[in-house]
Length: 356
Image (cartoon, rainbow, N blue to C red; front, side, top):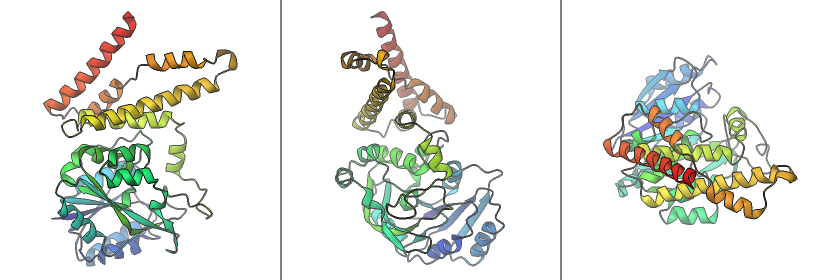
């Protein structure tokens, strides 16, 4: 089994060397480290990677983007360049436990059907002082669902998978690429949802990385009672700019479109129904919130709202068409058939409503 690490960098010189040394210290070394640099301009990041590559016990392949693309597209590039059977995502500022690769490789080997494995993480500050565990945020219901093999359902209700703790089989990579840029879902949440719909997911309830929190990172974790409880970043601001639940509706419709257009042969009808029900629930919440914020004289009573929600048409065809465009129409016959069937069904439902 060949292991690839997909690392993305951007002005990461502050902590990059420490992360690279933790990769070099793995008891099971990777077969390759694929680094995609997003036009770093700090004058040091590229040099650190090149120097590490000269003495590295494994192959290091560095590419530099022609322009700054952002973390989603940068990770997509790194993932696409990996040649291994298992792809590990890697940030530039963490520290990995020395047995991380060995532990996760063993998990994949023990169950050939497993598509994605992720672990807990130890949240640490800039100086690697322990703050708490990442999985402390997991609700009991989500833990039960993960343990009982219902990862897709768990991920619909809570973002559980942090990219730096994740690894997945490269044979499923085509399902997640390209990663949509215009959705509030970050690359790790997108990959986890698609993978969970297509294959079994395993959670390792042990911290295999030190997940460093600092003010230079794009997005991090809120740690109550610490200086990291309230902070902002470009990615946090991007997520917060999407009003709830409108942003989530857009995100999950995008996921649903990908499941229909590219993963239909692998996704169960139960999972498709699960995400459809979740979209319906979010659409209902949005309608209720809009009604509550309307002027009193125009606000619908409950009976009218109930009828309004029953008659509401959920539009999914535009998302499917957009994903077909992203994919360049490079789809199998079964995928195209499933997409066209859903679009046709929606149109038929619209005609029925008009006739009624």
